[in-house]
Length: 338
Image 1 (cartoon, rainbow, N blue to C red):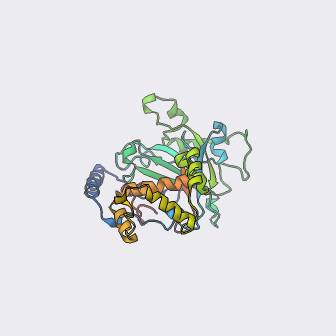
Image 2: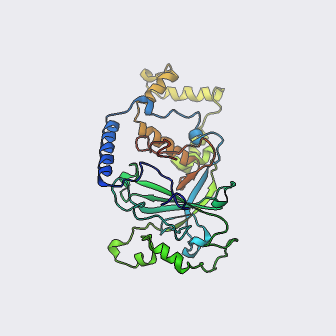
Image 3: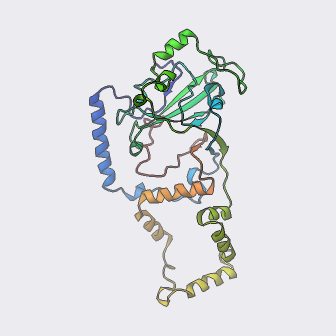
């Protein structure tokens, strides 16, 4: 797409490969990179342990979480500016949609699947971004999602006064504003894989679509420790643990609890580990599999909030993604993450 069009490719992962030679080179680079990863990484690859369980995504940052909820299909049409998962894209700009070339996986060269879209207008002084939606497309092969170009994001934006929507929000039940003949002709040149005509065509050529759900966004809130423990071990077990939990560390009750616990151990094991320093513990942590460590932190964060979340985003400066893996996390550079 040209630079002056509203739809922009936000991924800039490796650039758009224009010929087969570029694709072959990219694949060879990936194979070399994979062999380097598989040969093992240094201790520096293991992320440092946060100061506390809440620091994974930055202290004091306000995160928003997205949850899948049932919603009537009529309420997920483009005139309502939906945030949603699955179905077909509800294009913000119904004419300037991505081309088939842009929606190809740069690793496999296969068409990408539509995963989700988020209506995310930004309160700034740009009059051309009154409406803004981010669309996310993924490779049909889940095992390739860590590859450069296997996940692509597109941003579409419009000013408040535009040819497609009224100035004020529409009400449920209001009809969709139809395209003019000229707009429809321009749209038809894009060969949208999710157009009405394409979805009525041969089954073999229809795009794969995930079940359609609305994305309801809420601020992240942390559960108290009792609820977190109940979510991990079950309510009854958590109640039993709470009843048997010692008092504040260092108190007489705590010391008595530790003494009683030690007395249940064989005499040869009593006191073992008491002299292990924090540095030695950290050294042992670094010897653990780095992906297992990161996955544990990922699940802990979700357990402390709401593990049914499917989306996390934050506008605060310094916010970092909560990756479930270290090896498969995308490289975070100005080239891969604009």
